[in-house]
Image (cartoon, each protein chain N blue to C red):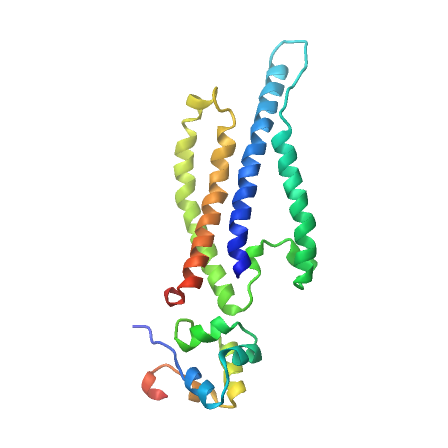
Length: 71
Length: 162
């Protein structure tokens, strides 16, 4: 069975007081794409994932993981 | 992406105009073939140029209106010649466009054999509608356009399906 990519984008956005719009602008995508990533409807590319991590100043493993329990 | 939905009906209108414009062309070619094959000394072709003028007029108008609009949107000259459907804003929209292209390609493999069968009925309607092949041919891009836009609409309005 294919594993899902879990993420903490919504939680981190709240912690860092980022709106979807602000984060989207920072990483160069549309607000809808950030919303889709948060809902796990869209799996971001490695590049976008790294940009999101960079904007939070966190390593990849603290933002994205293959298993929900890993986060 | 809103403009993508807007351009669907524009594309359908252009296809319809192209189909309408093809009718006098077929008539003209039929008359020309009759003159060449026949032994008549007279040479006269009667063509209704109204549909062709409308098609060229709409094409010219769209070119004049769309080029400054696209330039204003910051598109390069190379991008001006790409369909408006490919004006994606980010990687997710590019992925959705890719999926729409895939579905459109798959649809072609179903619609072409069906239309090939429909074409075999041409001899039955040849007298009444000599332009029949042109209209049948235009069904291919019409189906592709429709599948493409339905896929976009489905995936953009219901992102959980993507």
